[in-house]
Length: 252
Image 1 (cartoon, helix red, strand yellow):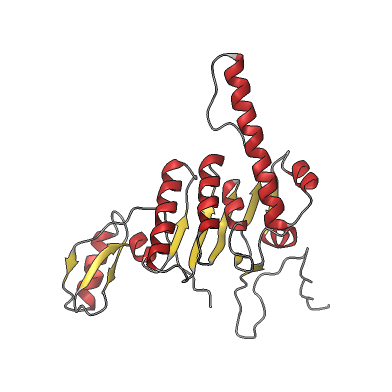
Image 2: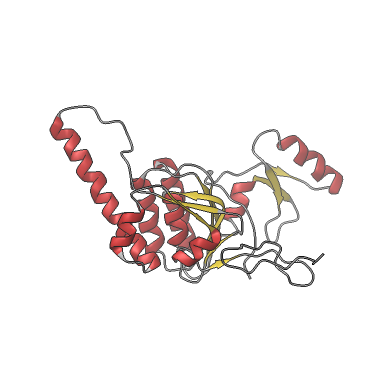
């Protein structure tokens, strides 16, 4: 069963060790620590003491990664380091990757993509809110059958652009343009492999900013399933009139 949780691309840091005398002590300590990086109590197996560690570290220990910022070189390095470390710990246990990302550089995103595909363990991806550009690409890069989205999440598919303003000789600018065009081709081929859609159709679609709801992303082939919150009678709370019949209201 998929468990909800939240993790960021922060570093692995150890907090100070605190002896736990009671729940009140824990609450007071937690309140003081919330002023900076959120920290939570964690008790290792076989220990009678709680260690306060930052929340990102805590979730890494649960094999969860949260990409919640632009995908740049630093984010890519941190994400790949965690992916590789988790494989060294257990190359069969599932990793969950939660994404709420406004985009990022193509080179950094493709580096994470290659690393994800090289891992032996399954990777569940989940769009928590908005996955744009390389964020949307990485949601689709999860293990087939394990690519998820929340009902109100959105996707933005777009073509690569130059990461930096290019100044220089005409030959230098032309070289940068060729690099971007090659990256565009990689994105189109990657989306073809992820979704199964025709390459020519994808090539036309990425010419403009292409927004998708979670339901449209499922039809597109970018994700496999939408996590539907349910009430006691098992009726989904969220309905999408495009793909799910709207509930009938009372007649007057």
